[in-house]
Image (cartoon, rainbow, N blue to C red; front, side):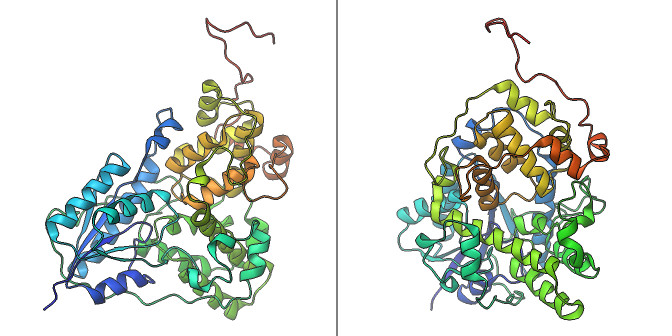
Length: 446
Protein backbone atom coordinates (compact mmCIF):
# COMPACT_ATOMS: atom_id res chain seq x y z
CA UNK A 1 0.00 0.00 0.00
CA UNK A 2 1.44 3.33 -1.04
CA UNK A 3 1.97 6.06 1.48
CA UNK A 4 2.50 9.23 -0.52
CA UNK A 5 3.45 12.26 1.52
CA UNK A 6 3.51 15.65 -0.09
CA UNK A 7 4.66 19.19 0.55
CA UNK A 8 2.76 21.99 -1.13
CA UNK A 9 4.95 25.09 -1.19
CA UNK A 10 2.65 28.07 -1.72
CA UNK A 11 4.21 31.05 -3.47
CA UNK A 12 2.02 33.44 -5.50
CA UNK A 13 -0.99 31.10 -5.34
CA UNK A 14 -2.66 31.74 -1.98
CA UNK A 15 -6.13 30.62 -3.05
CA UNK A 16 -8.43 27.63 -3.41
CA UNK A 17 -10.15 28.71 -6.64
CA UNK A 18 -8.56 28.09 -10.04
CA UNK A 19 -5.55 26.30 -8.54
CA UNK A 20 -4.97 23.21 -10.66
CA UNK A 21 -1.78 22.26 -8.84
CA UNK A 22 -3.51 22.22 -5.46
CA UNK A 23 -6.29 20.14 -6.97
CA UNK A 24 -3.69 17.64 -8.20
CA UNK A 25 -2.11 17.48 -4.75
CA UNK A 26 -5.52 16.79 -3.20
CA UNK A 27 -5.94 13.80 -5.50
CA UNK A 28 -2.42 12.35 -5.54
CA UNK A 29 -1.07 12.17 -1.97
CA UNK A 30 -2.31 10.58 1.26
CA UNK A 31 -0.99 13.30 3.59
CA UNK A 32 -0.04 16.90 2.81
CA UNK A 33 2.14 19.54 4.48
CA UNK A 34 1.19 23.10 3.48
CA UNK A 35 4.10 25.53 3.65
CA UNK A 36 4.79 29.16 2.81
CA UNK A 37 8.15 30.91 3.21
CA UNK A 38 8.42 34.57 4.01
CA UNK A 39 9.84 36.79 1.28
CA UNK A 40 12.98 35.20 -0.13
CA UNK A 41 15.95 37.55 -0.14
CA UNK A 42 19.52 37.43 -1.34
CA UNK A 43 22.70 39.47 -1.12
CA UNK A 44 21.38 41.31 -4.17
CA UNK A 45 18.52 42.76 -2.11
CA UNK A 46 20.83 44.08 0.56
CA UNK A 47 23.16 45.62 -1.98
CA UNK A 48 20.44 47.57 -3.80
CA UNK A 49 18.47 48.53 -0.73
CA UNK A 50 21.12 50.38 1.29
CA UNK A 51 18.64 52.36 3.41
CA UNK A 52 16.07 51.55 6.07
CA UNK A 53 12.52 51.37 4.77
CA UNK A 54 9.04 51.12 6.25
CA UNK A 55 7.30 48.32 4.36
CA UNK A 56 4.53 47.91 6.93
CA UNK A 57 1.72 48.28 4.37
CA UNK A 58 3.02 45.44 2.24
CA UNK A 59 3.65 43.24 5.28
CA UNK A 60 0.14 43.89 6.63
CA UNK A 61 -1.54 43.02 3.31
CA UNK A 62 0.55 39.85 3.07
CA UNK A 63 -0.30 38.90 6.66
CA UNK A 64 -4.01 39.36 5.92
CA UNK A 65 -3.67 37.21 2.79
CA UNK A 66 -1.91 34.44 4.69
CA UNK A 67 -4.34 34.61 7.58
CA UNK A 68 -7.44 34.38 5.43
CA UNK A 69 -5.96 31.55 3.39
CA UNK A 70 -5.02 29.70 6.56
CA UNK A 71 -8.64 29.90 7.69
CA UNK A 72 -9.76 28.46 4.34
CA UNK A 73 -7.29 25.58 4.74
CA UNK A 74 -8.46 24.96 8.30
CA UNK A 75 -12.02 24.52 7.03
CA UNK A 76 -10.65 21.66 4.89
CA UNK A 77 -8.79 20.10 7.82
CA UNK A 78 -5.41 21.61 6.91
CA UNK A 79 -3.20 24.38 8.30
CA UNK A 80 -0.60 26.67 6.76
CA UNK A 81 2.95 26.56 8.15
CA UNK A 82 4.74 29.88 7.73
CA UNK A 83 8.54 29.53 7.69
CA UNK A 84 10.91 32.43 8.30
CA UNK A 85 14.26 32.23 6.50
CA UNK A 86 17.32 34.47 6.38
CA UNK A 87 18.57 33.68 2.89
CA UNK A 88 17.98 31.52 -0.17
CA UNK A 89 20.31 28.83 1.13
CA UNK A 90 18.52 28.92 4.46
CA UNK A 91 15.28 28.22 2.57
CA UNK A 92 16.96 25.23 0.91
CA UNK A 93 18.03 23.93 4.31
CA UNK A 94 14.57 24.30 5.84
CA UNK A 95 12.92 22.58 2.87
CA UNK A 96 15.41 19.71 3.11
CA UNK A 97 14.70 19.35 6.82
CA UNK A 98 10.99 18.98 6.12
CA UNK A 99 11.63 16.44 3.34
CA UNK A 100 13.74 14.30 5.65
CA UNK A 101 11.61 14.64 8.79
CA UNK A 102 8.30 13.81 7.08
CA UNK A 103 9.70 11.28 4.55
CA UNK A 104 8.30 13.34 1.70
CA UNK A 105 7.69 11.57 -1.61
CA UNK A 106 6.16 14.45 -3.63
CA UNK A 107 6.61 18.19 -3.73
CA UNK A 108 4.24 20.70 -5.36
CA UNK A 109 5.47 24.15 -6.38
CA UNK A 110 3.80 26.32 -8.97
CA UNK A 111 5.89 27.55 -11.88
CA UNK A 112 7.12 30.95 -10.81
CA UNK A 113 8.50 34.01 -12.52
CA UNK A 114 10.78 34.35 -9.50
CA UNK A 115 14.38 33.26 -10.03
CA UNK A 116 14.58 32.85 -6.25
CA UNK A 117 11.94 30.11 -6.16
CA UNK A 118 13.63 28.19 -8.95
CA UNK A 119 16.99 28.52 -7.21
CA UNK A 120 15.67 26.97 -3.98
CA UNK A 121 13.81 24.21 -5.80
CA UNK A 122 16.74 23.31 -8.08
CA UNK A 123 19.15 23.06 -5.13
CA UNK A 124 16.68 20.88 -3.25
CA UNK A 125 16.06 18.51 -6.15
CA UNK A 126 19.80 18.01 -6.66
CA UNK A 127 20.06 16.71 -3.11
CA UNK A 128 16.82 14.68 -3.23
CA UNK A 129 16.62 13.35 -6.80
CA UNK A 130 14.05 10.65 -5.99
CA UNK A 131 11.33 13.09 -5.03
CA UNK A 132 8.52 13.51 -7.54
CA UNK A 133 8.24 17.21 -8.41
CA UNK A 134 4.90 18.57 -9.63
CA UNK A 135 4.58 22.00 -11.20
CA UNK A 136 1.84 23.91 -13.01
CA UNK A 137 1.06 27.44 -14.11
CA UNK A 138 -1.07 29.17 -11.47
CA UNK A 139 -0.09 32.83 -11.99
CA UNK A 140 -0.60 33.26 -15.72
CA UNK A 141 -3.43 33.25 -18.25
CA UNK A 142 -1.77 30.71 -20.51
CA UNK A 143 0.10 27.54 -19.80
CA UNK A 144 3.38 27.13 -21.61
CA UNK A 145 1.79 24.45 -23.78
CA UNK A 146 -0.81 26.93 -25.08
CA UNK A 147 1.72 29.51 -26.23
CA UNK A 148 2.28 29.55 -30.01
CA UNK A 149 6.07 29.65 -29.53
CA UNK A 150 8.78 28.20 -27.33
CA UNK A 151 9.82 30.38 -24.39
CA UNK A 152 13.22 30.93 -25.97
CA UNK A 153 11.42 32.42 -28.97
CA UNK A 154 9.37 34.88 -26.92
CA UNK A 155 8.86 37.99 -29.10
CA UNK A 156 11.22 40.84 -28.34
CA UNK A 157 8.38 43.35 -27.88
CA UNK A 158 4.93 43.31 -26.34
CA UNK A 159 3.19 44.29 -29.58
CA UNK A 160 4.58 41.22 -31.35
CA UNK A 161 3.62 39.04 -28.40
CA UNK A 162 0.07 40.40 -28.37
CA UNK A 163 -0.40 39.77 -32.08
CA UNK A 164 0.62 36.15 -31.64
CA UNK A 165 -1.57 35.39 -28.63
CA UNK A 166 -4.67 37.55 -29.14
CA UNK A 167 -6.31 34.95 -31.39
CA UNK A 168 -5.74 32.07 -28.97
CA UNK A 169 -8.89 30.90 -27.24
CA UNK A 170 -8.46 32.35 -23.76
CA UNK A 171 -8.66 29.72 -21.00
CA UNK A 172 -11.40 29.67 -18.39
CA UNK A 173 -10.90 29.55 -14.64
CA UNK A 174 -10.66 26.10 -13.08
CA UNK A 175 -12.72 24.72 -10.19
CA UNK A 176 -12.34 25.49 -6.51
CA UNK A 177 -10.57 22.90 -4.37
CA UNK A 178 -13.03 21.59 -1.77
CA UNK A 179 -11.11 18.64 -0.28
CA UNK A 180 -7.54 18.17 0.89
CA UNK A 181 -5.62 15.22 2.40
CA UNK A 182 -5.06 15.35 6.17
CA UNK A 183 -1.98 17.22 7.40
CA UNK A 184 1.34 15.65 8.30
CA UNK A 185 1.48 18.08 11.20
CA UNK A 186 -1.51 20.05 12.42
CA UNK A 187 0.56 21.74 15.12
CA UNK A 188 2.92 24.69 14.78
CA UNK A 189 0.86 26.17 11.96
CA UNK A 190 -0.52 29.67 11.86
CA UNK A 191 -3.17 30.31 14.53
CA UNK A 192 -6.76 30.87 13.40
CA UNK A 193 -6.52 34.49 14.58
CA UNK A 194 -3.49 35.29 12.39
CA UNK A 195 -4.06 38.37 10.24
CA UNK A 196 -7.59 38.97 11.56
CA UNK A 197 -6.95 42.34 13.20
CA UNK A 198 -8.83 45.37 11.82
CA UNK A 199 -7.05 46.69 8.75
CA UNK A 200 -4.92 49.79 9.14
CA UNK A 201 -4.07 50.03 5.43
CA UNK A 202 -4.29 53.59 4.12
CA UNK A 203 -4.68 52.75 0.45
CA UNK A 204 -8.49 52.75 0.72
CA UNK A 205 -11.09 52.24 3.41
CA UNK A 206 -11.80 48.59 4.14
CA UNK A 207 -9.18 47.10 1.83
CA UNK A 208 -7.79 43.76 3.01
CA UNK A 209 -5.61 41.03 1.58
CA UNK A 210 -6.99 37.57 0.98
CA UNK A 211 -8.86 35.39 -1.49
CA UNK A 212 -12.37 36.27 -0.33
CA UNK A 213 -11.49 39.97 -0.17
CA UNK A 214 -9.98 39.84 -3.66
CA UNK A 215 -12.90 37.99 -5.22
CA UNK A 216 -15.25 40.44 -3.53
CA UNK A 217 -13.34 43.37 -5.02
CA UNK A 218 -13.50 41.88 -8.52
CA UNK A 219 -17.26 41.33 -8.20
CA UNK A 220 -17.76 44.84 -6.85
CA UNK A 221 -15.75 46.40 -9.67
CA UNK A 222 -17.73 44.67 -12.39
CA UNK A 223 -21.04 45.44 -10.64
CA UNK A 224 -20.49 49.08 -11.68
CA UNK A 225 -19.95 50.58 -15.13
CA UNK A 226 -16.36 51.58 -14.33
CA UNK A 227 -15.00 49.11 -16.89
CA UNK A 228 -16.75 51.03 -19.68
CA UNK A 229 -14.70 54.14 -18.85
CA UNK A 230 -11.44 52.52 -17.76
CA UNK A 231 -9.22 53.79 -20.57
CA UNK A 232 -10.09 57.43 -19.90
CA UNK A 233 -9.56 57.20 -16.12
CA UNK A 234 -6.68 54.75 -15.72
CA UNK A 235 -3.95 57.43 -15.67
CA UNK A 236 -5.39 59.32 -12.70
CA UNK A 237 -2.92 59.55 -9.86
CA UNK A 238 -5.09 59.17 -6.78
CA UNK A 239 -8.63 57.89 -7.24
CA UNK A 240 -9.56 54.41 -6.04
CA UNK A 241 -12.19 53.94 -8.76
CA UNK A 242 -10.04 55.21 -11.63
CA UNK A 243 -8.32 51.85 -12.19
CA UNK A 244 -9.15 48.25 -11.42
CA UNK A 245 -6.66 47.71 -8.56
CA UNK A 246 -6.75 43.99 -9.42
CA UNK A 247 -2.95 43.91 -9.14
CA UNK A 248 -3.17 44.06 -5.34
CA UNK A 249 -4.75 40.60 -5.17
CA UNK A 250 -2.99 39.18 -8.23
CA UNK A 251 0.40 39.69 -6.57
CA UNK A 252 -0.12 37.07 -3.84
CA UNK A 253 -2.28 34.92 -6.06
CA UNK A 254 -5.36 35.71 -3.96
CA UNK A 255 -7.19 36.05 -7.29
CA UNK A 256 -6.25 34.39 -10.56
CA UNK A 257 -5.92 36.23 -13.87
CA UNK A 258 -8.30 33.71 -15.44
CA UNK A 259 -10.97 34.47 -12.84
CA UNK A 260 -10.69 38.20 -13.61
CA UNK A 261 -11.00 37.40 -17.30
CA UNK A 262 -14.13 35.34 -16.62
CA UNK A 263 -15.73 38.32 -14.87
CA UNK A 264 -14.66 40.63 -17.71
CA UNK A 265 -16.23 38.34 -20.32
CA UNK A 266 -19.47 38.16 -18.32
CA UNK A 267 -19.51 41.95 -18.00
CA UNK A 268 -19.08 42.38 -21.77
CA UNK A 269 -21.92 39.96 -22.48
CA UNK A 270 -24.22 41.96 -20.22
CA UNK A 271 -23.11 45.53 -20.96
CA UNK A 272 -21.29 45.33 -24.27
CA UNK A 273 -17.61 45.76 -25.03
CA UNK A 274 -15.72 48.88 -26.00
CA UNK A 275 -12.18 50.20 -26.12
CA UNK A 276 -12.06 50.46 -22.32
CA UNK A 277 -13.09 46.88 -21.61
CA UNK A 278 -10.59 45.74 -24.23
CA UNK A 279 -7.92 47.78 -22.44
CA UNK A 280 -8.40 45.72 -19.28
CA UNK A 281 -7.58 42.60 -21.30
CA UNK A 282 -4.72 44.52 -22.93
CA UNK A 283 -3.16 45.14 -19.51
CA UNK A 284 -3.68 41.54 -18.40
CA UNK A 285 -1.73 40.60 -21.53
CA UNK A 286 1.05 43.06 -20.57
CA UNK A 287 1.29 41.27 -17.24
CA UNK A 288 1.33 37.98 -19.11
CA UNK A 289 4.13 39.16 -21.38
CA UNK A 290 6.35 40.12 -18.46
CA UNK A 291 5.56 36.80 -16.77
CA UNK A 292 7.05 34.87 -19.70
CA UNK A 293 9.74 37.53 -20.16
CA UNK A 294 11.04 36.71 -16.68
CA UNK A 295 10.85 32.98 -17.40
CA UNK A 296 12.98 33.43 -20.52
CA UNK A 297 15.58 35.82 -19.18
CA UNK A 298 15.98 34.56 -15.61
CA UNK A 299 18.80 36.34 -13.80
CA UNK A 300 19.12 38.85 -16.69
CA UNK A 301 15.99 40.43 -15.24
CA UNK A 302 18.26 41.89 -12.54
CA UNK A 303 21.32 42.65 -14.67
CA UNK A 304 22.55 46.24 -15.03
CA UNK A 305 22.58 45.93 -18.82
CA UNK A 306 19.21 44.22 -18.84
CA UNK A 307 18.31 41.82 -21.61
CA UNK A 308 20.01 44.05 -24.18
CA UNK A 309 23.42 44.01 -22.53
CA UNK A 310 23.59 47.81 -22.66
CA UNK A 311 25.30 49.64 -19.82
CA UNK A 312 23.52 52.90 -18.97
CA UNK A 313 25.64 55.89 -18.05
CA UNK A 314 24.95 56.16 -14.32
CA UNK A 315 26.71 56.46 -11.02
CA UNK A 316 25.66 56.22 -7.39
CA UNK A 317 24.77 59.28 -5.36
CA UNK A 318 23.64 58.11 -1.93
CA UNK A 319 22.07 61.47 -1.16
CA UNK A 320 20.04 61.48 -4.39
CA UNK A 321 18.66 58.03 -3.69
CA UNK A 322 17.60 59.10 -0.21
CA UNK A 323 15.97 62.25 -1.60
CA UNK A 324 14.02 60.14 -4.10
CA UNK A 325 12.88 57.65 -1.45
CA UNK A 326 11.91 60.39 1.02
CA UNK A 327 10.06 62.51 -1.57
CA UNK A 328 12.52 65.34 -1.26
CA UNK A 329 13.61 66.00 -4.86
CA UNK A 330 13.21 69.23 -6.87
CA UNK A 331 10.19 67.63 -8.62
CA UNK A 332 6.88 68.04 -6.72
CA UNK A 333 4.93 65.39 -8.62
CA UNK A 334 7.67 62.83 -7.97
CA UNK A 335 7.75 63.76 -4.29
CA UNK A 336 3.97 63.34 -4.01
CA UNK A 337 4.08 59.91 -5.66
CA UNK A 338 6.90 58.73 -3.43
CA UNK A 339 5.13 59.99 -0.30
CA UNK A 340 1.99 58.18 -1.42
CA UNK A 341 3.94 54.94 -1.85
CA UNK A 342 5.58 55.27 1.55
CA UNK A 343 2.22 55.87 3.26
CA UNK A 344 0.04 53.36 1.41
CA UNK A 345 2.22 50.73 -0.28
CA UNK A 346 0.67 51.68 -3.61
CA UNK A 347 1.24 54.05 -6.51
CA UNK A 348 -0.64 54.50 -9.78
CA UNK A 349 0.82 53.14 -12.99
CA UNK A 350 1.36 56.69 -14.28
CA UNK A 351 3.11 57.62 -11.04
CA UNK A 352 5.44 54.63 -11.35
CA UNK A 353 6.48 55.74 -14.81
CA UNK A 354 7.19 59.28 -13.62
CA UNK A 355 9.25 58.38 -10.56
CA UNK A 356 11.20 55.76 -12.52
CA UNK A 357 11.97 58.27 -15.25
CA UNK A 358 13.11 60.73 -12.59
CA UNK A 359 15.45 58.25 -10.91
CA UNK A 360 17.02 57.13 -14.19
CA UNK A 361 17.17 60.36 -16.16
CA UNK A 362 17.04 63.27 -13.73
CA UNK A 363 18.98 61.71 -10.86
CA UNK A 364 21.27 59.52 -13.04
CA UNK A 365 21.00 56.55 -10.68
CA UNK A 366 21.30 52.85 -11.44
CA UNK A 367 17.73 51.72 -12.22
CA UNK A 368 18.14 48.63 -10.02
CA UNK A 369 18.02 50.75 -6.85
CA UNK A 370 14.56 51.91 -7.85
CA UNK A 371 13.39 48.46 -8.88
CA UNK A 372 14.60 46.93 -5.60
CA UNK A 373 12.89 49.67 -3.57
CA UNK A 374 9.62 49.01 -5.40
CA UNK A 375 10.07 45.28 -4.80
CA UNK A 376 10.06 45.76 -1.07
CA UNK A 377 7.47 48.54 -0.84
CA UNK A 378 4.70 47.77 -3.33
CA UNK A 379 1.79 45.69 -2.09
CA UNK A 380 1.22 44.56 -5.65
CA UNK A 381 4.86 43.71 -6.41
CA UNK A 382 5.15 41.25 -9.27
CA UNK A 383 8.67 40.20 -10.22
CA UNK A 384 8.18 40.19 -13.99
CA UNK A 385 6.10 43.36 -14.24
CA UNK A 386 8.29 45.30 -11.82
CA UNK A 387 11.73 44.45 -13.15
CA UNK A 388 10.54 44.28 -16.76
CA UNK A 389 9.01 47.75 -16.58
CA UNK A 390 12.08 49.22 -14.90
CA UNK A 391 14.24 47.78 -17.69
CA UNK A 392 11.78 49.26 -20.16
CA UNK A 393 12.13 52.77 -18.66
CA UNK A 394 15.91 52.47 -18.39
CA UNK A 395 16.32 51.51 -22.05
CA UNK A 396 17.76 48.03 -21.39
CA UNK A 397 14.58 45.99 -21.77
CA UNK A 398 11.82 45.16 -24.22
CA UNK A 399 11.19 48.64 -25.60
CA UNK A 400 12.49 48.80 -29.19
CA UNK A 401 12.55 52.61 -29.03
CA UNK A 402 15.08 52.79 -26.21
CA UNK A 403 14.66 54.50 -22.86
CA UNK A 404 11.57 56.50 -21.90
CA UNK A 405 12.11 59.95 -20.46
CA UNK A 406 9.11 61.93 -19.24
CA UNK A 407 8.92 65.72 -19.10
CA UNK A 408 7.89 66.04 -15.46
CA UNK A 409 6.55 69.59 -15.82
CA UNK A 410 4.38 68.59 -18.77
CA UNK A 411 3.17 65.47 -16.94
CA UNK A 412 2.20 67.63 -13.96
CA UNK A 413 0.13 69.89 -16.21
CA UNK A 414 -1.57 66.88 -17.78
CA UNK A 415 -2.38 64.89 -14.64
CA UNK A 416 -2.35 67.37 -11.75
CA UNK A 417 -2.87 70.85 -13.25
CA UNK A 418 -4.38 72.27 -10.03
CA UNK A 419 -1.73 70.62 -7.81
CA UNK A 420 -4.46 68.79 -5.87
CA UNK A 421 -2.51 65.52 -5.75
CA UNK A 422 0.76 67.30 -4.99
CA UNK A 423 -0.72 69.20 -2.07
CA UNK A 424 -2.49 66.14 -0.65
CA UNK A 425 0.73 64.12 -0.56
CA UNK A 426 2.93 67.07 0.45
CA UNK A 427 5.04 67.03 -2.68
CA UNK A 428 5.16 70.84 -2.80
CA UNK A 429 8.01 71.16 -0.32
CA UNK A 430 10.87 70.08 -2.58
CA UNK A 431 14.58 70.27 -2.07
CA UNK A 432 15.87 72.52 -4.85
CA UNK A 433 19.33 70.94 -4.81
CA UNK A 434 20.30 67.48 -5.96
CA UNK A 435 23.91 67.63 -4.85
CA UNK A 436 25.24 67.66 -1.31
CA UNK A 437 28.57 68.89 -0.01
CA UNK A 438 30.40 67.35 2.90
CA UNK A 439 33.85 68.01 4.27
CA UNK A 440 35.62 65.80 1.75
CA UNK A 441 33.88 67.21 -1.37
CA UNK A 442 35.14 69.84 -3.74
CA UNK A 443 33.03 72.99 -3.49
CA UNK A 444 29.96 73.13 -5.75
CA UNK A 445 29.31 76.43 -7.47
CA UNK A 446 25.57 77.20 -7.60
